[in-house]
Length: 317
Image (cartoon, rainbow, N blue to C red; front, side, top):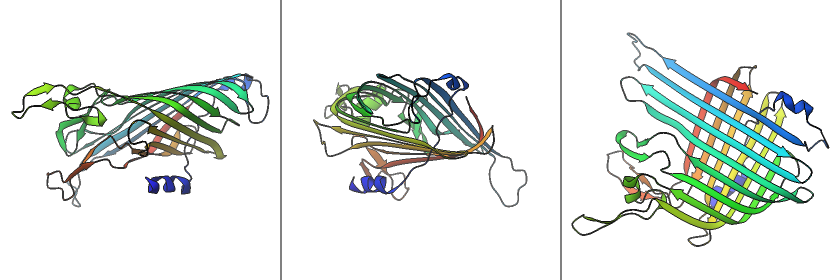
């Protein structure tokens, strides 16, 4: 964990900040850093890749892949209140040769935060975050074993604390009172104890005595930091990291969700973007096959990392 935090402190992350709507022109500006009223917008990105080969001497396979991202936000601010809402939905797939289509990206992430101003840049605030996925995930290359589904897992987090927003670019939310709920709404996965829920109990003959729990509750502290800025023309950035510590069980093991999205705008409709996500959850056990012989050599928590590069169509409003 110390290595992860050191990495976080040393690296500057670049991503995309959604362009505001035309209606923002009518919003009253108070200072250079604060805009009152509604600020709404969206970013959509679709990247496609297709390869077709016929009698190709160098070899290869026909393939098609796609990645889509939709990011929406609607934020409201007045002299005493701040209400921020965001929804990120992403999905990607790859079809190669005669092999079955495999999923490369899949997420639903919704956040709503309301704050009441108590001082310059400071708010007492409450936050709700919900995360899950849309379709089944498999233990590739074995596509017969389902390891995740819609609401398996699903995460619901509710937090109460202080929010520091000195301007529209930086936001630091610190919540000492936080409830985190994990849902595994698939009984087979719940029986296996997937994603940290209590697994099923069997007798010595293999007879099921008690089903696995489909729900797990945690109570602890939570920190969420976001930074977004227009670096230069056609280059935007945003960095988002969530940290959670369970007071009641191994509080030293910090859950981490760190997301970055980089984008360069070529013109009104063409962009290049790269998104990354780093995850660590001590309760999520991952199987490791070190020599690729089909036999699991170890099971335990691991740092998860995902990177998606897309060159394609984009539209902002």
